[in-house]
Amino acid sequence: MYRKINDYFLQWKKSKYRKPLILEGPRQTGKTYSVLEFGRNHYENIAYFNFETNPNLSKTFAGDISASYLIPLLSRIAGERIIKEKTLVVFDEIQLCERALTSLKYFQEQENDYHIIAMGSLLGVAINREVASFPVGKVDLKTMFPMDFEEYLLSQGDTELVAQIRASFTSNTVLPAALHESAMLHLRTYLCVGGMPEAVQVFSETKNYTLVRHVQDTLLSGYLNDMSKYNDKTGTRKTRLTYNNITVQLSRKNTRFIYKLIKKGGRAAEFENAIEWLCLSGIVSKVYRAEQVKKPLANYEDIDSFKIYVSDVGLLCAKKDVAPDDILYMTEHIDDFKGGLMENYVNNQLIANGFTTYYWESNSEAEIDFIIQQSGTIIPIEVKSSDNPKAKSLKSYLNKYEPSYAIKLSANNFGYNDSIKTVPLYAAFCIENA
Image (cartoon, rainbow, N blue to C red):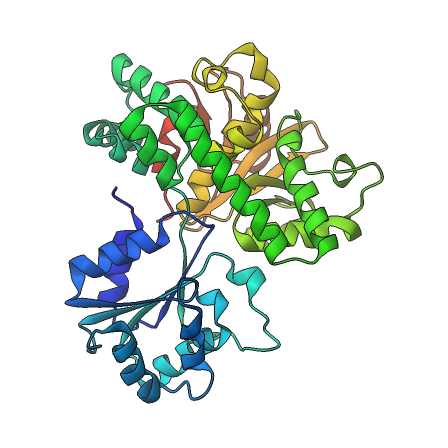
């Protein structure tokens, strides 16, 4: 399956400023597969090391971790001659060996001609920085997300549909009705399947939603196990309680996160560490309210007002045990959930394209779902789960701030009118960070 991150890997390989690369992201997003596939296509050989399947490997890093000392040892362990610029060295599950993580600093300083990619799913929560120093400034960092909707379409063989969607997005011209309906059906299917590669592969091969849900339930169980593995007993309980409550909060009309909905009397002091754990693991992401619409938006984030979205919409539907037919036909049974689901989907597409997302509200009377900063311009984005033509909040924002244009994502076809760029929900992946 084509993954956009392959293009990043190739740029990294060719860059004269290349450093050892740390690839982060939630479990099972395809990190190992993508890196090894890249290595097979662009290097003479691969030296692969997995700290989970080979626990004794950590002993290699117990003493001297200089590059000149490690390379001969690693070559012997891998059974591969490690050659500068011709061998891709891969450290998998590097969070299990903090000394290996620290060694990347010395590879960059002493032998930067060796090409190294290290991967870890829980680097943010598993590394004890009092024991091992993180190689700040000595590595390149990249986060890998679940497959976005464009990658999903390509996995289904709809290359031409992707090209048509991109062309209509650029020109603001209506997509032919048949293609529009096809893309909307694909989108509803994607909401059920999500972007976890194993779930996408199972669906591509079987078109069986029951088998897909089994994959998703297994992934969710793995996330819960990680919460126990990298937490104390109290932290585990709070983290699981918070994670379970996120789907409930996304079913509210106002999806702003409220602590007291986790449990009666719940407060930030009790649950903020749990939320931080979930964010660091990549399982969820936070979207803060922008107190003012000024550049840079990061200067005006309200740290006490935020929304939380999960990393994959398929896992969100599985967690909430939503029947696939209710998503495919958008039945009235999930009316309360549709808005939060679509917001979650759009947020995932935006952050996969490199945006930091915010939301805006005015005296609780008007709310813009997302605000992004694109090429130095602040762009408001309103999300509608249906073809509702009303855009009261968006018009209020336009009158107040007079942006160059705004984006409205809905079930409507492409168009442009009164400074509002109408974009079908399936084309959210076209909103790119130039």
